[in-house]
Amino acid sequence: MLTITSALYEKIVAHARADHPDEACGVIAGPAGSDRPERFIPMLNAERSPTFYRFDSLEQLRVWREMDDRDEEPVVIYHSHTATEAYPSRTDISYASEPAAHYVVVSTREPDHAEFRSFRIVDGEVTEEEVRIAGEDGPGEPSQGERGQRERGQGERGPGRLAPRRRNDPVGPPVYPGDKA
Amino acid sequence: MAIEVRIPTILRTYTGGEKSVEGSGSTLAELLGDLDSRHQGLRERLVDDAGLRRFVNVYLNDEDVRFLGGLETPVADGDTVTVLPAVAGGSR
Image (cartoon, rainbow over all chains, first blue to last red; front, side, top):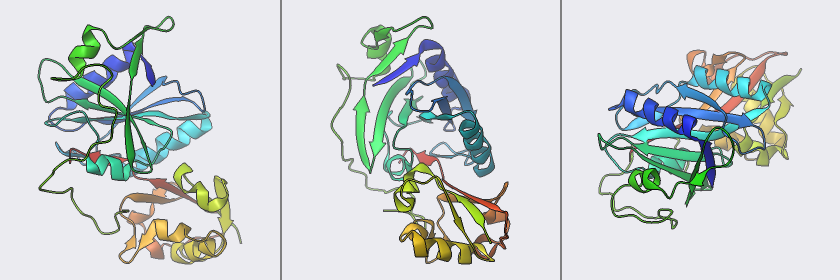
């Protein structure tokens, strides 16, 4: 389960909206081992693309060093999909390299509401998790309410898909030399 | 001769959980070969037939080695090499 304040939730969605139609991306750092997202760090998408994102390598070094100095870790790694659903793609899964992070995907394909979902990606396996949005002053409601329902996109109920899915994609992801399997 | 190499979480299985290991060499290629002799399999996560893997970032001190000499980047005693898997993905 991802527990996140409404303020941070809003910041992620606002970033995704601001960068639309390019994919937005970033990190929320938190104290190492706490599983608490606290410090919002929007990142440059060095690809500046509507279909791909990548942290700028030197910015990533700076941010990772800073987290290390502050005894933090990346609790949330977020990015947006601008024309597809808020679910990890094949490339999202193949490049996920922080097994302890919550991978948040926001879809900005609809202008009037954002889809916000969170996943764990470990050893190539995707598991969706509940998103609990808390107020600033203590634990809050699980996102089963109006915002939660609306945010999950059409036709879904409850905590969202929990089973891994295979997608029938006639065109695969970009293939780069040296991609890990 | 000691060059510190900082290892990301996902590769610490090769270093017995250590976040930092030491090695020697006069180029990045030599250094990685040296590390691999004690941490077998580590080099293959960083290098393939075409050179440094595209979605792994390797830094010499504060610079990305892609802008230096790639695998032929000279390294020296006292340098710090940092490895970070790229954070990337997309809609497909």
